[in-house]
Amino acid sequence: MSKKALGKGINALFKDIDEKINMQSVIQIPVDSIKPNPYQPRKKFIDDNLQELADSIKLKGIIQPIIAEQDKDDTYILISGERRVRAAKLAGLSTVPAILGNFSVIEKLENALIENIQRENLSPLEEAEGYKLLMDTFNLNQEEISKKMGKNRSTIANTIRLLKLPKKMKNDLAAGIITAGHARAILSLINPSDQDLLYKAICEKNLSVRGAEKYAGELNKGNKTLSKKLDKKITQKNKVTELRSMEDQFIEVFGTKVELKGSLQKGKIEIHYYSMDDLDRILSIISKRKT
Figure (cartoon, rainbow, N blue to C red):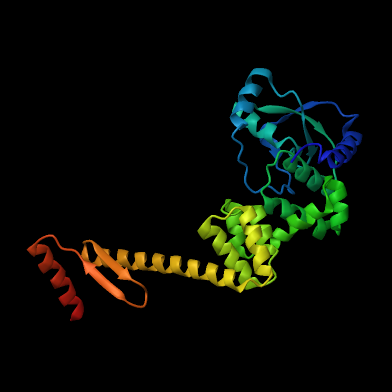
């Protein structure tokens, strides 16, 4: 996400913030007294460059003050500058420079969203949940959110749609097993059973986003041949997985190499032995199980 694409939203937000803090001076506040923005949409904070920022802070200090709001009990709510606060703690600083102001709930949420989206720190689901929170809490529609965020309304709509994914698919999206592009291809399918089929195909066949979109288009056209082909391949792989699981159970019982050859309907079991004592031991196990 480029800064240019978010320029309108950022400029509007920062203009509002400037109006609230332009008469304020920079003060030092205890780093341990800073509380996170309660409307922070980001659930996980992973930043490989945080140590690099901490090393820079050790040498040069914090050049740009954070923005915060004073709360009761001599604590402060962080409005902007989470990376700087985390890096300051990592660098061992006891205080950080800050400019204080008073902000509405919606301003806190808007700032957290824009700051994270600008740095691409939000996962697709976290971004979607942030937009949904704006809609539910402040009764904003997608067009209003798009203006505040400086993004196209269609982008907002497509992101929010990710929340319609079934739980398992959401978990895989959050874990990075599938991408937002894969998720949108799945959601483009009209038939829920086709959605599940495509999702399994993406995972089993490691489909690219373009490949998933192509499959989705064919499935929406009612391509039964493709549907049966995908279903057959996935079923066959599931059968192989189940046979392997049963092989492991046999190996655990007999304590030797066991091979299942065939399908779930018919086949044969090969139990390997490597000496007469080994054969007697296996026979004893079978006899005990018979009785």
